[in-house]
Length: 215
Image 1 (tube, helix red, strand yellow):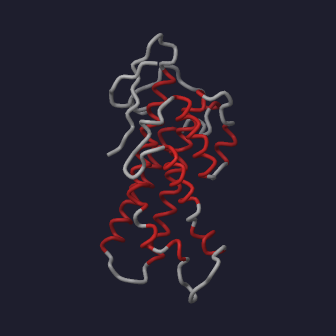
Image 2: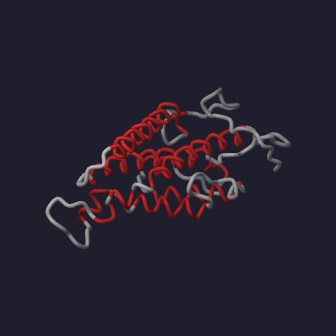
Image 3: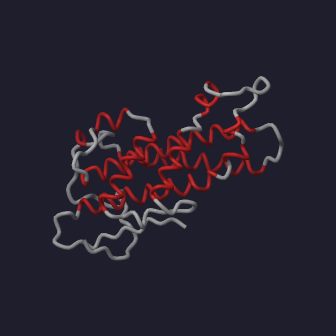
């Protein structure tokens, strides 16, 4: 397959070559609505990151937890979009009911990695702070382990009452936020490119370009 350098085609910019039936997607055809919801989650997370950065007071480590939750859900939705658009390239596409019900970032990341490998985009799948598929998988696993309630329940050691678990300290997680923000954009671009590639799968030679690298 020949790939030329062009901007990725947005799934939402124009109708697809062949419209999918609503019974063929995990979201019952609500691609646009869920996309905008996921982008709103990202926007809210960025606003909170900015606010947290302006507040230099000690003792506000719990304020990072809503940011973690927002990025977590945004990544879940964008990875589901990638799996939905890219699953057709796999020998065994993911069942739509299973895709709808799961909330496991680790499981979704594994399928995303399979899709990226299958279409041969490993070298292009990069963004700020992430240069390889392995680093993407590692970041997702790290975020999964930072779920605030789980961290509180399973803390090995507890400090004073109300103290935040060590792994959620602002100093520990703040550096993740720019990477997560860039990853959301990368996944959105990836889903767009996969949709465009699949829509033109019947052409003898495609000019679809995947250049999702986010700087």
